[in-house]
Image 1 (cartoon, one colour):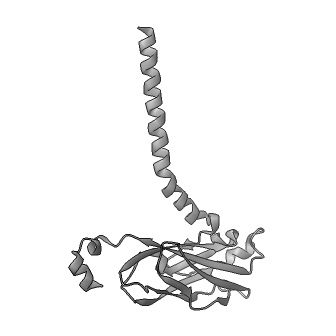
Image 2 (spheres, helix red, strand yellow):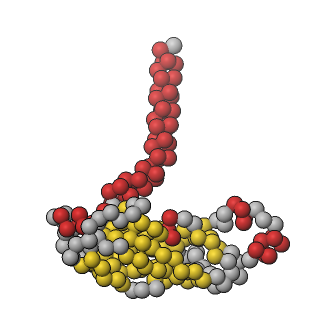
Image 3 (cartoon, rainbow, N blue to C red):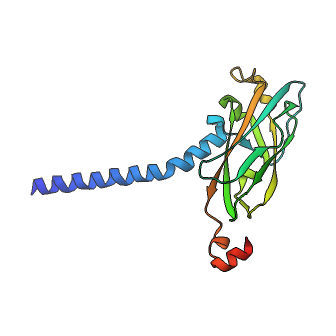
Length: 192
């Protein structure tokens, strides 16, 4: 009898451990994403609705990089290689995406900045990366990104000397939005 109770208790504890580990694994991705956005960890830029910082008389050069995942058929590139602006000044850059295929393709951009320490001070106001992009066959679009480098960078003993930052995007193919994916093949062909 004691042995049966001990086995039941052990089984209940193991089920509890498995459920706790499952919950932790489920929460890990959103928590990590939130942590990176808040701290700039891993070169993740911040996001704000507007630039309310003071422009200072220090300059930074922002380089622009564009990549596509192996499975993404789009052509993707920055329309400028780099931009020099004062720290605190709002910048506007454009990227171009082209769908050379005969099918509608959806994509989402992942982004980061390098060096990683600059991620906490590099802030986006508007970006094509905030939403999924859908391009029809042969469609070519210019997509803006509005950003600034926070002057608090200058006060950081580790990042204060950074004057060159690379903003990098990688586009990944995603499933078509439900509205388009549920269309019949004939209707989808007319949409394309």
